[in-house]
Image (cartoon, rainbow, N blue to C red; front, side, top):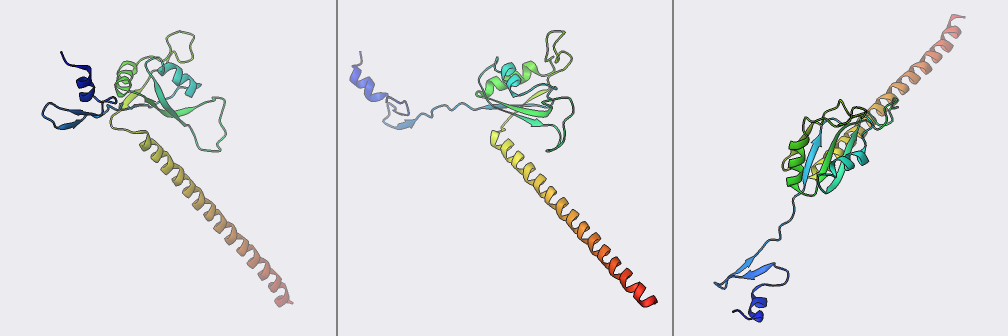
Length: 183
């Protein structure tokens, strides 16, 4: 039988370092849970973040959810509210994300006949080795590209307006000079 003091000397409280019987120090890595991200290629009308959390929350803990708005910023939306083109859902555990993607891919969203999602099908893909930071970087890049495009459009419009204004002023000057030279 091993005394309690000997056991407490061999196994530290936090479980990070353990000495083997050979006297070598081994470090045990605390297993960090890898998060899994699934991609939703189509989001039905009237589906929002709360509804996505409700549906996917049945399978496991959900971290972050992002739904890409459909259309351009400032564009007037028609009668269909909460229209999103695509989305990403982060699960706390990678295994659960894989299971959800395989279970729900190509299945009907709505089960009841009167549900507004009855005729729609999930199109879900698990994205391996994809981190949320990749999505954040992509969105930041797209936002910067959109800003740059708007700046170039505004600069082009200003150049055109200045060009037209200069031509109008030149034509007025020419009209004033012409009557004087004829008389």
